[in-house]
Length: 427
Image (tube, rainbow, N blue to C red; front, side, top):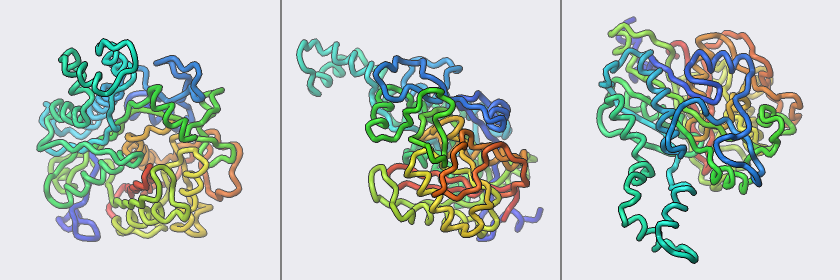
């Protein structure tokens, strides 16, 4: 390739992907996850991590095969991020001795002390009656809980991952709701395009399945209550969908300036061709009724990639299985792709792994690149009762196809929307 070949249509450095890592309830690593996803196997099951009596939702896609202590969101998120990053960095061949030659961008869930820790502090306050915030402050000042201090600080996971892999500069922690994982990738792409770094480790991770999260999402009427059978609860784009199922895990990508990657003889797995984002602020949780922000994010990603709608071979949908989100996403795709929408394959892996929240955009980017590599589109399982109001070509069983470019959608609470265009070759 000539030097010009390492530039995109806008003259910017091409951003190559040289390493992928993934952890979900289906397993650890690309091989196990890809085999399960294409077989249409679900990782959603009855929660065993904590008691669920009295909860309306008792199922989730928890990752129960990695030892983690304590079982709280920051520790789980860090463990998943480590496992995904280990696979991605090893595949890339960069930084094998803990000296990764680039920046870290990591999406992590919002952090707050969980109920067991709050209860312990309340008991330590020595009060028999109602516990005030001042009582908790006095308990914290006793220094008995210093070990929790770092654990429940937002930047701790990033700092620990940066130390583990030896990334350069200050690590960036971010949280943009359910688009966070895609935003981490976007930040890495932009840093490489600006010439600030030649490599970036981009991670989305989430271990937030706990009683409080389940209750909060349940109060928003966001979760499915179809607990039996668990694997049948998440049914994106189906008429009988009733909410999403929480999941957890991590996705990691090693991004590189394509010229630098080629110069060192790296195998290029694909390219991040375009990123588009749009924030609307319409509501803290609801989507804008006209779908305009989602439409704008999709169009921005296509424009950034320098391609038109006809260049997309399949859509990795946000596809949460909530009545409103699925309708809004279908409306947005129809506005962008027009009459082709009924012939454009679309699929949601949330039907099998649940909604991994902060990690979703990164996990789905990994799945999108595996789709390109293997020429096989994973299914949307449980698509048995199509919604006549959503006229999409939903992939109900794994489908072999020539896939060169994938649009991966991530739409989050608070109107935070990020879309990625991933491809096997420059646009």
